[in-house]
Amino acid sequence: MAEHQDETKAAYDGVVELYASLFADRLETHPFSRNMIRTFAELVRETGNPRAADVGCGPGHLTAMLNELGLEARGFDLSPGMVDHARRAHPELRFEEATMEALPVEDGTLGGVLAHYSMIHTPPGEVPALLAEQVRVLAPGGLLLVSFFATDGAEPIPFDHKVTTAYSWPADRFAELLAGAGLATFARLLHDPASERGFLDAHLLARRP
Image 1 (cartoon, rainbow, N blue to C red):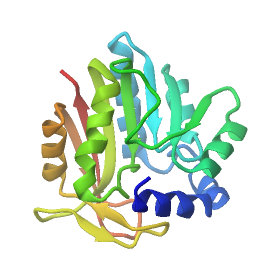
Image 2 (image 1 turned 90 degrees about the vertical axis):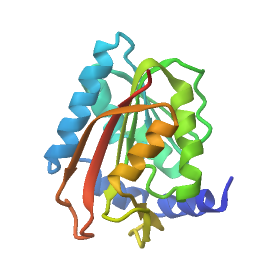
Image 3 (image 1 turned 30 degrees about the vertical axis):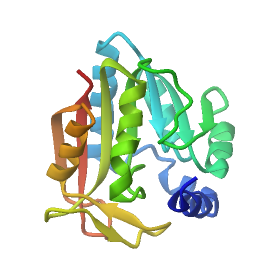
């Protein structure tokens, strides 16, 4: 496992209960994120393949939301503490410990992948490989919704996230990476920040041709 993954794993293992207490509302106070996820779920259902992955699922709140929206979602996280919490909070759902770069999913089997602020800790140079893994598990016509902190400029910027080092991305630059991975971005939403960090919040919805 790469050094940044070890650091991220340890950092999130150390804040499981606090993190879960902050995000257990399933985005009740984040209308833009909530409605982008609802749109994503609707479009995945329309593909006829409701199987989905919530990568970097944390305490499992969004995996549960996806299932309530009609998907057959599984949650994956590199933090065993988060996976344990998710299993206890949502015993009817399936959660597994895994990295986003090596998902225990067969090729081309998913109708959708949700990556809700879960790619933000990946160093920029490693993001293409991470995206390639999401493409691998998506069926043709499958959808990826990725959310992240957005910034102006031409390149991603590291910042001190409350848990561990993260990166904010120019939305156009991230869309270029999606295209390079073979995904066609067809919707994007940028809006004022929901936190004190000051970055825009970005949501890109892309499809595997």
